[in-house]
Length: 160
Image 1: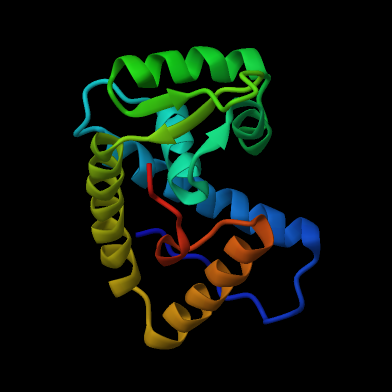
Image 2: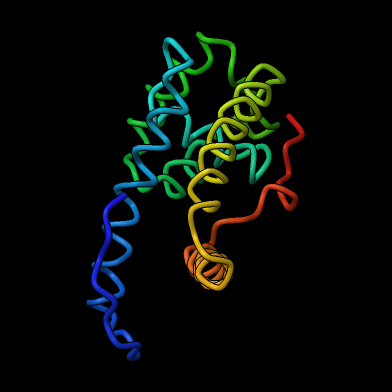
């Protein structure tokens, strides 16, 4: 474990907070990558797409592209790959101008498996913190997730 000097507690500027989040994101990305190691053929962007779909429920391709911050043609290729793996299904509403994408039960099982692997590793990290540090991290993560618009799993709409 890397020890850092204890700096006096001062209100953080957005820049300092961003730097701290950047460092924490490296640790979180490492955990994310390791949680996907058990899956042979699923990339982080593909997994993120499944999580977005699971959290929002059936979503149009254009809405998915906006949620992921990518071009619609990228989503088309992404959905093609996920459909070929059996992780998403497409449907066409009555107006046929838009394709609606939803996760399959197989995708939900993968999300659960990967999330549990991540959860276990994160619990291991949290156990290395003092209780007051852990409380501060929990409060910070909850505030950060809320500000980023990320829903807790118990608020997801996962119906395919």
